[in-house]
Image 1 (cartoon, rainbow, N blue to C red):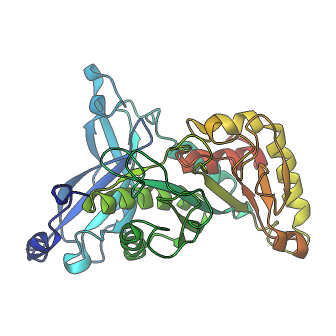
Image 2 (cartoon, rainbow, N blue to C red; image 1 turned 90 degrees about the vertical axis):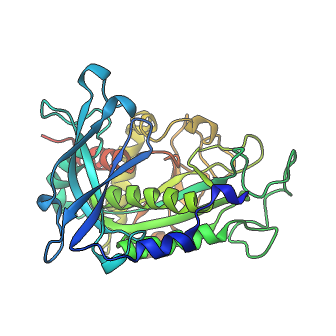
Length: 361
């Protein structure tokens, strides 16, 4: 892509290495009305031992500019909930990323704050020891919103050589993937792997296992990091569940789940009981599993139909997949393959807990 869209990293480096004179930079991050991330910076004094969420000041932003509040009552408050080392401003290792919940001035959560309810569910059902692992698929686009590396005015060869591919003509922008992986590791994100996906210019990273609300926190910050890394390479990141119509795979957010009961011998009974409950609330799950998911859940391209619930062992065309290894052992976890790539991980993990164990009292 044209160099004018890329950062001049070498020039920037000499400034990023300057002494900060006993102060740190804190990047406050939040989720906006459209399922994207926003952020802004503030200066804080150095603190021995570093900052935890409770040490950090509450801040605010103009919610009318993010679709989160009306113009006549536009202040939305940022309440810190998680802190991560900042991989972009590494001087001294003290600069931080601050993930925040959004709250209104009357003390109620902003309507786009899905973390609050999910955290209550995780706390109420903490005895279940819920583990989550989410697989985030995404597509890299150029400045014309075309998949990166696709022929101008045409299409690449059909799917087949691209999944976990290696080599020119099979994968594009591996630099972004590698940079993002390292940035996540530096920040303490529980990223567990990456791979090239079935459609060219499509990739995936996995986060987990994470316990409870930590899943949503780590995935949202991983998404933020991906956008920031891609920004430096002049690429756009799309979480559209069907970025290219036709005979091309869509993009999902496959969600793996287990509880302590499922992870021990005989756990298949608990897995089957949970799947039965999921079947009874299929429509409620689809409602929060991402915008445009009907374009992806067609029963083709390794998906189940959006209109019908199904499950099976090692079946990637089902709503719920039980890994063959787990079926053979009789315990483990299951994979919910219905969530779209643009779904909110707080809503996914929250409704799984609600369906399996009940709503917050």
